[in-house]
Length: 279
Image (cartoon, rainbow, N blue to C red; front, side, top):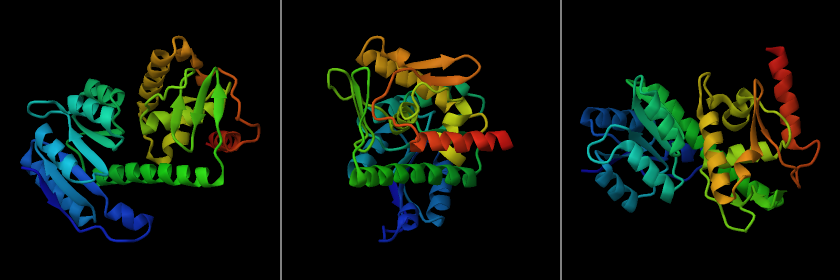
């Protein structure tokens, strides 16, 4: 049976919104559910619990959820199956819980659109830190989109494609929208803002995740693969817009209208290169 815990939402700034965010924990282990419920509630988050996919869907139908903590090993429908279903219908962030050593599950979860993962057993404090990092990124994306739209509505064009960062919309050459996850969209914008420039995997991690990135984070590789497939599916040959540079990283190969020299992207790259040189 689905359960809900935590304080009611209260008005306030960004920090207050983070503390009152509503988290859904989906795990068939009752002990883990109760442990996370107590710990996350103690740290100011509202928490709902579900033991399987059926209970998860019931909670989602009844409440606005800000982030889903989803276990891979569930009775009936697996967490990977549920992740794929969720990503097809919602952009709600998903953090997967996987067994230690199950790298395949982690990679598949990221390919299906999960925002992050944690292996079991885990330290609840690290889980809380990852949840907060994802919530901050989600809030930052929304804030940046609103600010950008209020100030201006830049549009990038390349090979017949149109990218609207403020609207978070990608249109293929025929004008049809292409669905991307939040992480995929941010990665594409990062590449398009820096056309025909080689960006290392570490630089892309820094630009898209910042301090939340870990040393062995493979999400960039997975997201690049997903982006290529989605571009290719929408327009044959478009997957080649993102090239792999051996020993260097990745490069967006097309000429881009709207990407100006001396832009924020170039300034950030110069700053990042300076930091790497100092390291």
